[in-house]
Image (cartoon, rainbow, N blue to C red; front, side, top):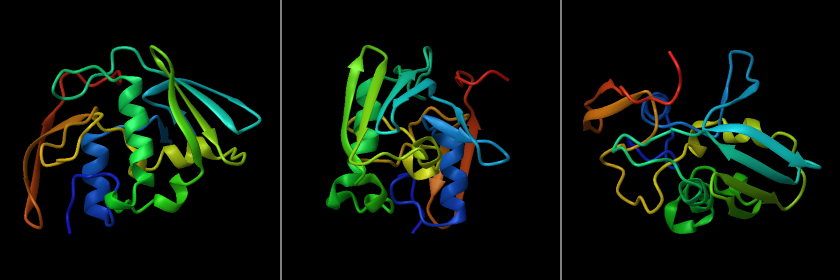
Length: 167
């Protein structure tokens, strides 16, 4: 059941792998308070319309830059029943997810939710490249790159020299 697809992770080794290879718009600190990650700025209007300004210079392991299209794809794919996302019911609150500028994404919720940054800090909502359907390469923006993945056997990672987060 091991997977590199953040939408389908269901146990602790998936959780660990997803934090190695991917990043979210936010991340939870030691007190579970959301902190900016791939989103360097977060604004909201009445906790219902959220605007995320993406971090400049964040790149996927293959060298391609993080774009609003990647975020839109990553968040909306959870609503597709064919994906079998473990957080489909949570994602149902996303009434609309769209690029609102060259480096911004807006998320309009069906009802206000002040905890959206906490929700987006969980590993299921990590950002993947737009259009990704095959997760065997583990292409993300995380601190490590996938070297080898044998489900149920082992995972080998190497340092991502171009990780967006300062040391």
